[in-house]
Image 1 (cartoon, rainbow, N blue to C red):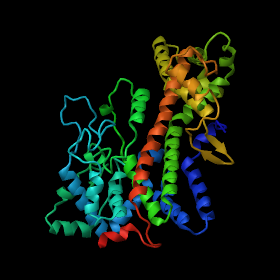
Image 2: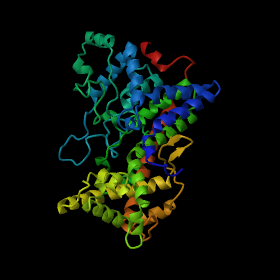
Image 3: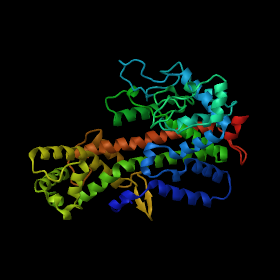
Amino acid sequence: MAQTQDAAATAKNNISSADRIAKVLIETIPDSGMKNGLKRYYDILNPEAYVSDDDVAINNTGLAGYFERHFSNNACFAEKALRFYNDVRTSTRATQKTDPQIARNSRPSLGDQAGKNRADLAPGWLYQKALKYTNGNPNAALTLIGLCGHDDTKQGSFRNQAATQRLHLNGLSDADLFISGDEDNPATPCPPMTADFFLPGSLDAKSDISESLKKKILRTQYPGKTAEQIAAKNYHVLGAAFMTCQMIEAGLNPFLAVRVEAMAANLYRGIRLCQNIETPAHLFWSLQRHPEIRRRAWGQSFEEAVLNVALEKGRTKACMKSQAQDDAVCKLLLTVGAPFDLSIPRLQERAKDYIQGYMDNMIASGLYASWHVSGEIAGISLPCSREQLFGPHPFMKWLVSQAQWPLNICGSGLSMESCRKALKTITAWEVDFDWTVSQHRAGAQFAARVCKPYPQGKTSMDEFCN
């Protein structure tokens, strides 16, 4: 359970596994508002649209496709959306860094919030603006916001000739309606990632993470940085509000809709983390079992043994032999980009730097995957989880990593220094879960406060022609 069986698991796809599980669960639910709400969520998310887990980190493929289809087929929606985003772009800032001398992020940051440091924008300003374009309909307003708010890049390619022509007749040019792009990024009505559109508090004053979590994020992930230097990533809040509203609209109880959205955020963060740690974790476990490294375990730390064996194999060109290609130490040299021939001193020094640079992340990845829920059960690949089943108690982890207690609780032959570094890295990954899930919960709770169920067969997309 805590670790995948072998390296072949890297080919497994957590999105595919989640897709299979979701289909089975939804089909077993009797016809009801719950089934309709979950099916709406599943149909919009469309896990089958993702080629692999890597796609999760790059694109919201399912959501982008959903909005592209409706924008193309519903001229009323397309026209309202183009008017709304023209209003947003022309009435608010396109960047947060108005003075190049100020040390801050050009994107909306953890330190920014409508109604506080941005007193020119009232809490909920974006939602209130969207309501004006939807005749006060909250569901339709969150659909407008969701079009560009589900991500801050690559939201989709939006074209509707009929809507564009009508707006041209009303005096709006393409330059008014679209931000010019290039071959990789086509022209879009969406504001840039640096715009006020992504400012925290844009739905209402409550639609943001807590101040205590912001301090924790700065302390664990960005020591020495200020809140204004770190991007807020508020698109998680906006996207979650849209998705939760759609579930409520289709008939799911608002309380359950919030729970579903929080669970989905956990899944998303777990897939993203697995992408980063799966390969180094497998390498860590393989090196732990390596006979030459185990023989040195009595007199050296794991890190020292790995480095010394790797350099020795490089000096003797042992990894250049065909039978050595599956050797874990040779895989380490290959992974870090070091040559198999280290007979030249300068190549040795370069390889040493590469290995030492890779070691901290590899150790943290191996420990995290060993302690937390992940791996494969009954042919289903589970994403990495925030939940810890094995390893030291979280309080002990805090004592060693933050309070600097001289206690090595990592085991695995690691030195005290490597243990402490790994614990700090693992804490940062755990805080990533808290950050993402809290943002999704904030957006979901906003939707639960404002969104209304629709009669079966009706959607808020129908409202844009009224």
